[in-house]
Structures are given as structure tokens and as C-alpha cells.
Length: 190
Image (cartoon, rainbow, N blue to C red):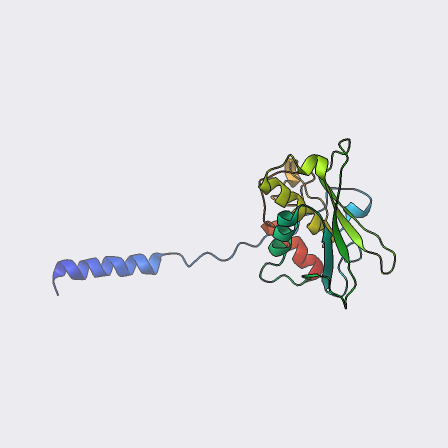
């Protein structure tokens, strides 16, 4: 073996030995709720549409792509809560429905109905949703389904800023649960 090759191999070996180990996965901590009072001030299992580890849903909405997108995205690897279509032998926990109110600034909302056997609702406001592009419609559905899973609003500014699908304003920046959303989900559901 030539001196040049031996020298080259020695340099490669030195570089490999000095290289830092692969970076560990970045741990993202859960973020606090931005509301100071009311049901959006805490994240609890009781303030969700989850029933015995699952959400059974029905739909009567024109935003089929948006709500199906949201369901798939909240069923990421490691997600504990199953989100399944209702069947003849199950009780619906959540219904996706539409309404239209131009005076309402919300594009969607989650309505909790705490009575025994009551169905909660995710309501899409056609007056807003019809003007949104696909990404924005998906974000609205993803956000509202986050509420049905028990998540609260997160800060989109100031020192408490986090990248979250749970910002209070509709936007098209995120159409997937962000790392902090998954951290809050894990804190709530394990």
C-alpha cells in the first residue's frame, strides 16, 4: 500500500472518529393554553369527544376532503385515539355538519354537548369555508378535530409563541399536526 493511500486512510479514520454522534430526536414540550378561563383554558379528557379511546363520527358536510384529511393526519404513527366512522352497532360521538352565517367570523367550531349519549359537532361555516383554498379548509378541519381530541388554543405570538395547528386564527401554514400538537396530545392521551 502506498504512503499516500495510508495517509488518506488515516485522515478518513480520524475524521470518522472525531465526527459527532447522530443527533438525538428533538424533544418538544407541550405548550400551555392561551385562554385564561372557560373550556379552552385547560386540556382534559373530559373536554373532548373521545369515548372509550375512540371517536366515532358521522358526516353531513360538503367539505369531505377537509374532514377526511384531518382524520388521517390525527391518526399519525403513535396516536392512541382511534377516529372511526360510525356503524350500525356504535353510537356517534361526533358529527361534521355545515351552516352558513356571514356575520360569524369563525370558519368552523367544535361544539361539546356533555349530556350522556349526546353527539358533539364540528360545524363548518360555508360563508367562510367556500372562500378558502384546499389548504385552508384542511387546516380548519384539522384544528377543530384537535378540539374534539381535547386540545386548547396555542399562542401564535409573543414569548409563548409555538408552531401549532391550534392557533386561534385560521391560516394555511400548517396542514399537519405540529410537534407541539403531538406533545400536547401525548400529555393528554399517553
